[in-house]
Image (cartoon, rainbow, N blue to C red; front, side, top):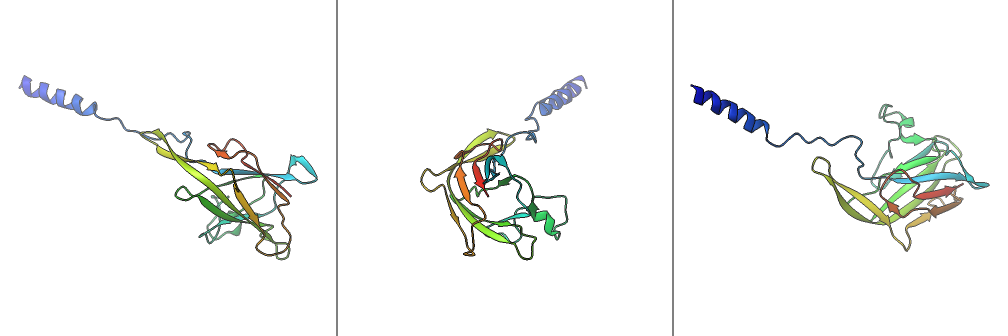
Length: 178
């Protein structure tokens, strides 16, 4: 009987020493988004808030969700009014195109600019629990192409590359003046 109990105890401890549960900490950096900061064209050092900006990527119908707490059918879910916006790039491609619709909730003053980002990707191992993340490098030649699909005026007067290495969301990658 003592042998059986000893074997059970040994077996129990043997199972408990198996691989621990790996949980990816929520604070672990994951695949970063491209960070764009908006500035006042008349005072280039001052940030400026966009008004009802809606960002729609290729193959998206509604656009990027900026207000997750709102219902899916609420148009405010897809707009932002800040001076910074974070855009997810495609991890399985080398280009991503977005429509930036300024004043998207207006009935008369809507203006759309399109930016196509050109980049390279690199998968980086984070940990066993978190797996891999993708970092991006905007290309040296033509890191982006800025167009006006409507043929009216560009609302983004100037678009500048600040940092081509997209490794975190703690810095601005693209500066936009309007």
